[in-house]
Length: 294
Image (cartoon, rainbow, N blue to C red; front, side):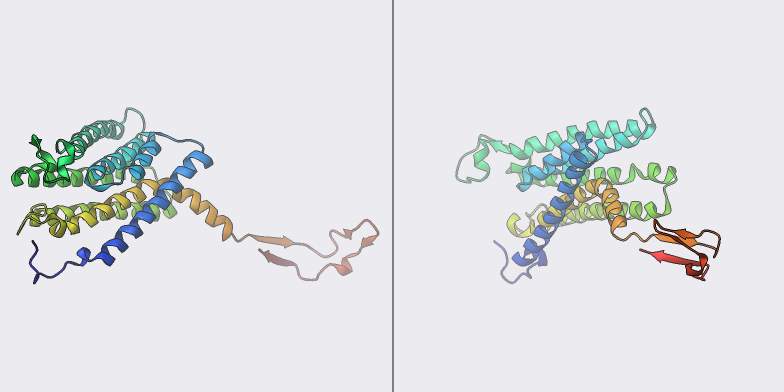
């Protein structure tokens, strides 16, 4: 039971929690669907990273799906890196190793999240006896806390690797000045994702995964739960921007384009003619040049 005199955290309030979750969820779906549309219908070159992004947008339910979502978004980014780096290069090999490690990491945590006890229904039917509990469903608070903290900590480290791995590639290929701002913005967004992961780790550590100062995950774990949704949604945006932004930039350039045409003529040099009769230079404007801006 929560202490009634205890101050209510901002993210424990229904309007704040729903507003943050809904806004970032919509942003993630807009960017994710935009990326898939461009890959399938514009450039017509879908890849494994797109299939993994579809999995991220699909498995978006509670704790078990969170483990899968964090795994799929990282796998999507590592698959995207494999298409960027030269085959056999150091960055390519590191991406391949991290891809395999992340798949194993995600599989392990997803299994213990989807099957936290036997039978699984004992996880939400508290009166039903369970023959065994482990991981996220363990009745040993020590195991329960260590499972949450270990997942958040390793997830944060992998986020750092995902964020930092393409930096040498980005700066080593002589990107244009205009593209520098986009790259910097993208990595700032990635840093925000890492910062959210650090905040979740601190919050879970301080509340011991919702069990301190008393066992009440619905109260003390609300903040890390909301941060988890923001983290996954921003990571989805990060994975979509490199595909969506170039097409969006070209579309905007067509809307705001300004073309300047300069026409220069000298009186008497080129008589203007029509199909009826020639017009001498008297009718040619006396100004030597003018500009047409459209």
